[in-house]
Image 1: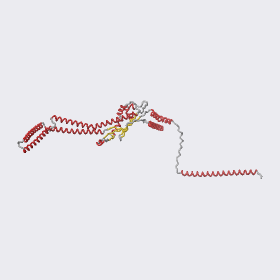
Image 2 (image 1 turned 60 degrees about the horizontal axis):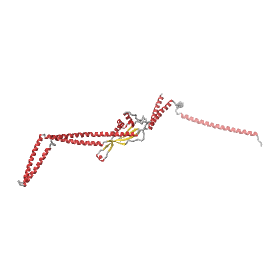
Image 3 (image 1 turned 120 degrees about the horizontal axis):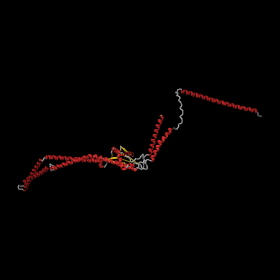
Image 4 (image 1 turned 180 degrees about the horizontal axis):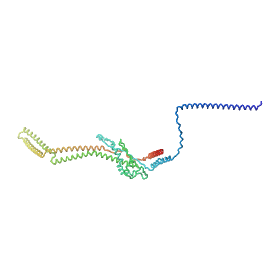
Length: 443
């Protein structure tokens, strides 16, 4: 079998034609698919547009605003540089200077604290006195207020300055000059009193009557010495006030006692002059003696008469016992007669010199003497009672916190002062910036 070249060439052209036809059919199919997709997309878009048109029919149309052009990029201006420089100077510069002064120049200050209160010892009843029970109670707000004002007074500053030399104590050491927190010696007493208010703090509790004193100094021994002097002077003041109150309470009773004693002395002197002038102790004393003597003689006469009657009945007239009894009767009768005559003479003499007036004067003086003695006794009792009451209610100063001795300094409070300086300087700088920018924006 032989191979025909012409036939091979024809077969090759037939295959190429078929292949091109298939390619054209495929491209035609792709175009149809793309067209369908495009038509479908257009239909979907038309439906969406129709739906949007229907929904926008009920929505109000807003006016179209013009779009602001974009803000240009910020740049650093002169005001920004001035603000930064002012921040450095006002805030950071001030804080750095204050921190340097606090840690390099400010001297350490030590604190001493003492607490005390005014008490009064009051024994209110004899039962408590016998039992030894004393009621210790606070004296009230009056004494507390007195001490509070006294500790802050110029008088106390002068006294403690004389005893401790406060100007020297509160002057900073020579190696550490502290013009802000130290005292500038010598100064006047007014300056020292003003500085005293900075270094001495007094706290009082009106409900309990307790007082606390806090003193600062550049040495712990000096701070404690000042507190001790304050306590000593306060105790002395309370003692003086208690003595004055005691004197006021007993002064009236003492004056009454002095007047009663003077009245009693004068009455006794008048009575003594009356007795010396009339030469008798009592006007009725002679009559009482004479009356007593007559009564005794009459009693003797009665017994003698009874004895005579008995002897006459039992003996003879010549009995010596009867004669002796009769002689005794005659003697007693004569004596009674003499005493009657003497008594009549004495009464006549007294009546001749005004016995009634004399007796009246004596009775008046005697009544005055009794009244003066009773008045003196009552005044003495009142005086003793006033003295006892004054002693029972005596006041004194009691310390519940003795003066302390510091080991470390707590002042100046450097972190707090530095923080306060930074905050205040920052607030000042912020206020200046706000005012400056507000004025700038107005113009």
